[in-house]
Figure 1 (cartoon, one colour):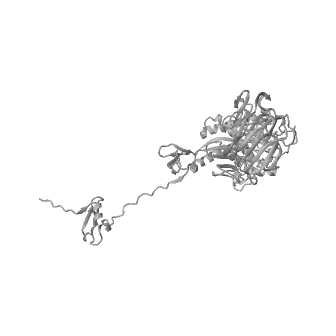
Figure 2 (figure 1 turned 135 degrees about the vertical axis):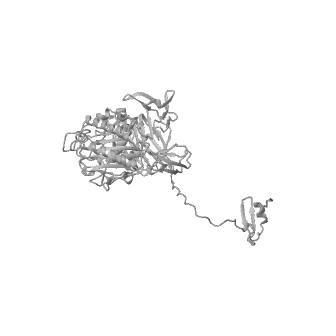
Length: 634
């Protein structure tokens, strides 16, 4: 049989568009380029006709809801999340372009290759001990910057804060440390007028990058508690006793560790224990008891909390001036550091540091509450404990310095024809000081306390200017060990200068020929001539502090101030400038031992610099009697 074919009117898309015919009513036309069928209505040309479609079909099943993806930068990725949580990280690749990520065990990974974007594991520090660890310092002393710190915080305490048999309270984890909410009283953790060392510790830890991870504080303290068992009137930290008020503090600590870590894990955080601060010793303490306690804590952390190398778990303890001297514990263990609380006003007459009700909250008169200061000192010492170098001889390489010239270290000298032509900086900032044209600087061996020195004794002996990138917002403190052997009016020892606008700060002889007093010329500002002692032909340690935020300067001789908080109008323009030694208008004859420039140095580290310099250069007899390193080097 013959097959009849029906062909529709058809053309390419181009032909239809160009011809643009009017199809009769019901007349079909097919565009075989785009597979489109149109039906004419006898009125509208092809280009105006709609594509043919049948009636609407039945509604299909609903699709699944889309997943909402949060967007972050690397810097603000959450510290906690459920395993497998996804996020878009706008700068997540190595080159800083967007990438998808996922969270697992504290780490954010790139989805496309499973490489690490950032590790958000929390480094936990335990803070434990007696009432000072709990805190009695005045919150009202704190600035707004001191009062809030970036870290996680947890505390456990008892209704009766001096009796570990009373009800134990457990906080939630806070995502920042806020003054007034870091000390529990009765069953309350808000609006406390007091704080402990936690705020200063976290402030300093973040400033010095104590760890590469976010920081968490786990605090548990019991007032008037004893380390050793034996007195039923007091709670204690005995690790084996089980009676009433026997071992109850230790049991409370174990309970706090369990509760805190469980809550962290349940909230999606990953964590590890990084160190412990221990402040106890006013009563009921002993070297053997503290050794036993530290060993027990290290064992628990290893057996129950995954800490490896427990013998190297870092601990910082506290020396109490009027209690048992626990220094031997630190001396015997390179991973145990010690901070002397007497330096921060702790005494038999003032049992609570940083509390004005006990006498003074700022015994150092540095404008900072003593408790905040000692918290910072704990962080500095913890840095040494983490590296296992607490009983190593301290030197400025342990801290951040802006400039460090050590004339005893002749490896830093470049010499030519018997004269030193260049001095290299040991701060790591790679500054160099070159001998000025015509200078004959001389290295002299074993000239002071068996140390080498650098001698400037010619009429033109000086260094040329070296540019240094000083901060425009810091508190600068500069230390010098020097002996001036001859000095005329306007002889200069140190010159700092900058332009646009002009600022000059010069250690200058403003007292006349044959005199050296450590005067400073300030332009603009108020020159400082507070020392009346002629220091000529004496090895001395001089320091100058230039407090940019407060616009004031202080000077000290052998760690005793002779000008204090002198208002200086020119400091507001401080910043990068140039420094030279031994010249401005005239050159002094001088022997140099050491030069150290710091920025925002803590009181604890300032004390260490003074102790280091005094012991190294034979100046300990000139330190004040209450200096923490009067008898022992840091």
